[in-house]
Image (tube, rainbow, N blue to C red):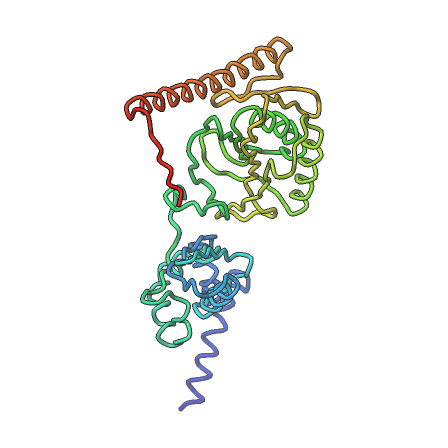
Length: 347
């Protein structure tokens, strides 16, 4: 009976296939095509993870290594350069850039809990008495802490410009075009006032954006700043200014890292007489509230000198006035106590 049934099925299926033709047969979706379709619905994207309550007893390299192993156990491999660990004496945390789907990101809490139960060593990653905190860094970044001078979040708000703080966006070919001009103007202006900082890579509104700046760009910027300031008059010593490059943490992947360049001019030391600094090109600039004034003309320079001498004269008059008042108080005390008699005893 079985062979008879098999021959009947063959006779029926062959005419059926001939009626459709080889090219017109509908294809059923395979397992691979279904997977590709699901990936199209939810493609992996870049996310920034905030990992809190890290153990501050470990060094930054150790924390980064342990954190990388932890993420690998969570089936979330990440490169070392995508892990930024911030360590303080009593706390530590990290920001990690990962490329995952949204569903994978949502399942992180319970996956982390499972990994901690299976691997006891991972508990050492958390601070004593605390549980490891793992979540997505939510925007805007201005709501999070600005990590001092070590790093900044893209989109963080640094406040408004002041007499001692100037912001420059620095977009495009800034480092090769406008950078040197701003260095001359603002360093000179800060030297002729009360010092200050020029932050390049920050919008006028105070929002951090960052400048594409590689290690090679850093070296060129340092050499350029040193060569320009060496031509200032009076002479500027190296301890009068500080040039730093602050990394900017961003969710966008860039081939060149983003940084905020900060040039700080320290408050000039008090001189016996007022000094007016000029750039390597013989120009003079002053800082006026949130802007600079200059290059100054000869009459403006004379007026500045007159104003500074008036200020110094006012300080001297205040000192003389204080000394005169102290003299009068001492004379009054002598008059109240009367003459003082002294008795000498010779043994």
